[in-house]
Length: 85
Image 1 (tube, rainbow, N blue to C red):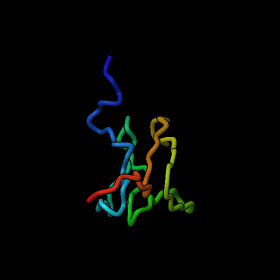
Image 2: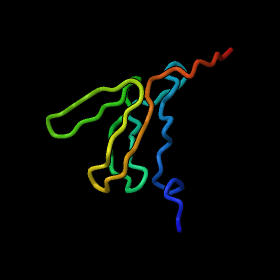
Image 3: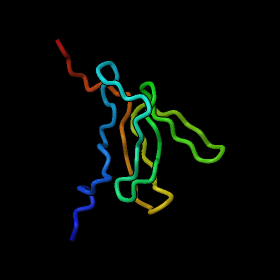
Image 4: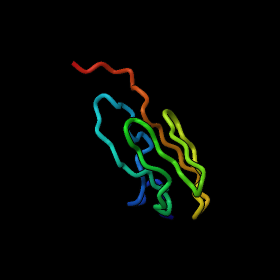
């Protein structure tokens, strides 16, 4: 049986965890199973939109894929607490 987490469409759930040290404007968040677009990271926030509902998230976002029903999770704009010299 194929491991779903290793699918070529998988998405790193740590998307943009360190905004001061990463550039990720326009980075898509996709379902780890079917690849459907769930949101887009922009300016340290995750933009999630469906029809008239629109939210901007900083922190952890969980979303069920409308296409396949898979539950997905991503964290955006949260400092890792590490210090870079």
